Length: 407
Image 1 (cartoon, rainbow, N blue to C red):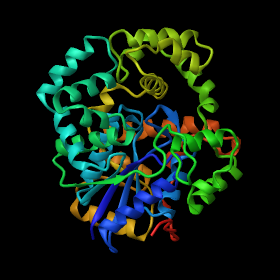
Image 2 (tube, rainbow, N blue to C red; image 1 turned 90 degrees about the horizontal axis):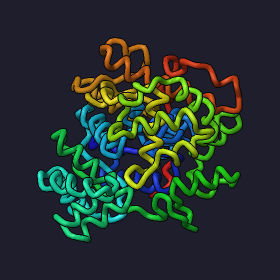
Image 3 (tube, rainbow, N blue to C red; image 1 turned 60 degrees about the vertical axis):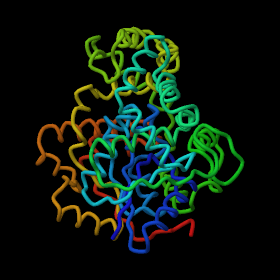
């Protein structure tokens, strides 16, 4: 059985995601299996997901995935490099993944491999220091160095969010020494943060549509739409950033200034600016605006704010994710888990309390992720679902029926 890994947020699971899974299955053959590492309740752009990790994982398995594993919260809300490295380390640690499938604007794995090698070179580090000294943002410096070393065509690929993440996946594969064959699936429809008029829309566009009360039935696989509709009917979503604004601001105002120096990406005085803004800003948008500068992008500030609210510190990234927690699976996914357990390569968690067997580092990461869910559920309209400590009681969703949207 050939097994492919996919890193995703599925926020929400849409037709473009179903297309990627279908194309990946074509490469695997009829007996293949697809394992997804998925962000939990918060996503890499520093915001809550529209629906809980449990609903999104169930939707993914109903729509073609076989097994969904949770990416713990420190990596979910990390930089692109940390996000990619944590997810790839989880897949690599399973010891059974043969193929790494990812969306790509270019569909050019050779070019993406060249860029990955460039970013790991001494020549890149020297150039990065030089451009950072000119006061440019990190993303702009990164692209400028690649332009110098490889030329404008390769550098332009870093403008595509999928290609940008793909490069980080490939770097993580190289660093981990994992035997995963890259599979670049050419993205169809609109890209991130783009406006389109076809059936395949970007996640950003779909979230904006949902926030304006528009129905997404024509843009999601029906099985995913039904899963989300049940969440809405039960008062568990959709969740948007403004729904958690007061809980997050309340938490931030209680923190001591020293806490901010321990945040990922703290340095160069950014932690002091963030602390001051947290004390005065009346809402999160004002906070982001007060801290943002040419050097620091909004997404970086949003991630730091979430890290502060969730007590995620620099030290939490010093290891790889210490366990693989199952969120949802079907029969093929259960077969993958049996294969993983036979190799003994990874600590696979189905019952949450089992994490305590894997040491204090694993328990801290699980508790941070549980705390994130405790914060997330405060956004639910139905107070009956806002109880804390739910992560310690939840079991994986076992899915019997699956709908393949594309053939």
